[in-house]
Amino acid sequence: MAETKTKATEASVTDTIESRANDEQRADCRVLMAMFERVTGHNPKMWGPSIVGYGSYQYVYESGRRGEYFLTGFAIRAKELVVYLFAEGEEQELLRSRLGKHRMGKSCLYFKRLSDLDPSVLEQLIAAAVSEVQRRHGTAGGG
Image 1 (cartoon, rainbow, N blue to C red):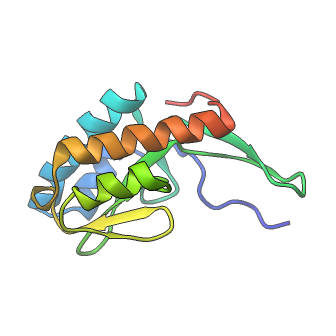
Image 2 (tube, rainbow, N blue to C red):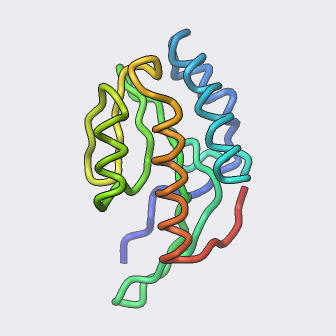
């Protein structure tokens, strides 16, 4: 069975942001970090080489395979920032319609700069996503 690549590490969040982000992204990351800490109550931790994750939860597939993953988080990509969250359902779609300039994958919200978004709507999206993950899986803690 393949091993999960995205695991919590002891790498420095600050060093990762400094090495990957341009000046504007660094400023956006500071705002995101404060938002994620406020919403989750957890400190940031690196998950794999590039994801800044907050909290964690345990999951179990029907096959019995188990794992641990971060509740929510973000990453710096070449020209975009990515927020990892589940944005399913009518309420989440309504929030996304008010968010601003972004695109959405299955559980990845992509945007170029935080100034393109309504930060209060983003915080509501993150909070709703965290609540849904905790409802489904509980929390393992991690911070």
